[in-house]
Image 1 (cartoon, helix red, strand yellow):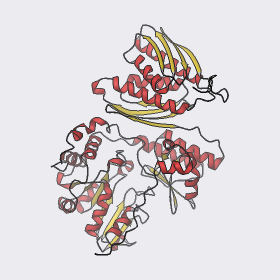
Image 2: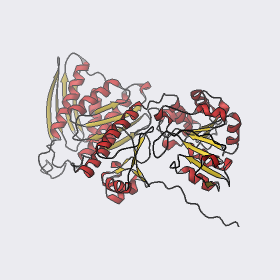
Image 3: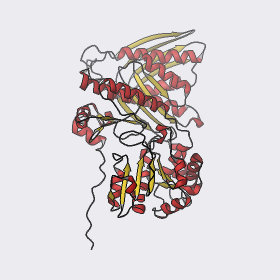
Length: 506
């Protein structure tokens, strides 16, 4: 038997569970700034997107996911015969090294670039060289990982592969280079928020695409992943908010003496001598960043997550007080997919978006008047009505609130508020009792207000009494949600260290 030795394998960072166990915190409090992925899955990643694929899960896709390939071809204005699907762009990186550089040479542009290129070269028995002009295969990471820069594309004699994993954040691409023989790689893992689905694609001339696909394993992408990718590319991707957040983060980090390189991606690279020191100091806060030989790489998520990172850095580098903990929670059912991040007490920074506009607004009012920081996002089966979405958004919020309240030690426990809104008047009384009880009278009810409060009381394990009346259903509901928020704010104030119960527990 031929003697075969193992190669140095690609090293994945430890799991949330492993990190949490090593530092003694809850895995749910871990925030990953080391993967360059979206803070949340896309709105298109809902159970309904998988319904057809699940119904046919016993079958192979005989057309090699032609609807997805057609959608990709239309998006980039290329022919169907110019699109190859793979299990992430990594499949193509390994495959292209074997096709064009087996036993030969590989170069990367820039020289400090994505580590997978070197692993692919090893698998192909190729040698890494510094000079792109002398290489059989040249990978141009554009924008570059880990530095975030946007390198120029060189003219080379070997096969040119342009890896555009982060192209959406740069606002430029090199699709026009396909005509002169380049292969362009794209992924659904970054801007589309489908890292776990493992879907990527290669764009090339029809002749090159035929060479690539002839050497692929059949159907390396699952039908479920293909369905998620099709739903994602059918919805225009908008990274403007993350780009704006990238610029804010760059400015905030600079005030701490951590000056990032100009970035065209969804992460920031900060040159420094001892990046591992920062990595180790941030871990107790549940913040995971990544060290490289010459610097620190920090993923840009969204404001609420990024402020946790900034707060931990200010604590470590500027001696400021540690930021309050944030609760992270996700709820997935056959009808809805919802994620929530909650800080109690907070500063009234609230964002709620489920597609159910009226009740999104109602929950925003509750959280704002409750003095919370809340970000709740997700999707539901609104085509069947508002019931499932409203019920689950309140249940998800209630579950997060229950986690945030913990053993309820030191809390006032009881709260009461009256709120008028024009002709409407609402009265709310709250007991953080640990027992789920709801006594709700809302007249007129716009449809789901009473049930929303019942759902909240069940999962938050609180006793909730609400009485509201008026002529306008909108005013009655809004006064009710504001009153509940203000009653909760009062009940959650701290007045010592005891559990407010003669039993000693709730």
